[in-house]
Length: 100
Image 1 (tube, rainbow, N blue to C red):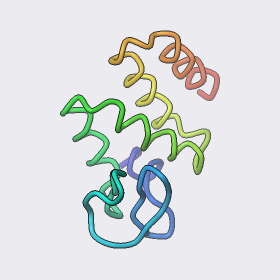
Image 2 (cartoon, rainbow, N blue to C red):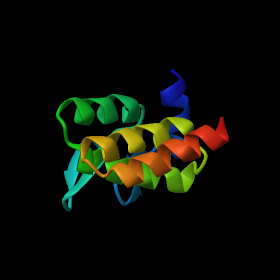
Image 3 (tube, rainbow, N blue to C red):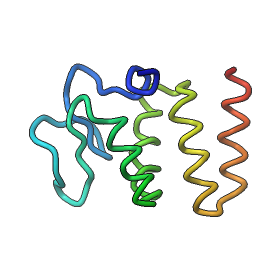
Image 4 (cartoon, rainbow, N blue to C red):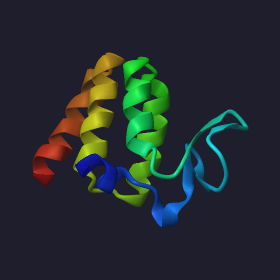
């Protein structure tokens, strides 16, 4: 529930990697579209599928809306780590530590 409340969409609209849209889940113009209320499930599903680049895009856009989201920052750090971008992973985890 913590991640859902921190990473949920605004105003009940579905979120894409480029912003907010309405409609059903699926792909639109090569952007991942996340249905309202499914953000956390989608993020963890993509992580399970090892689609870290897609997760990074979604989380970076989420951080534009909620810049102090420790959940988004820590998951972004995890994605950087799994992509072997260790410097970026350290940066994300340090921000989480400072916010704690």
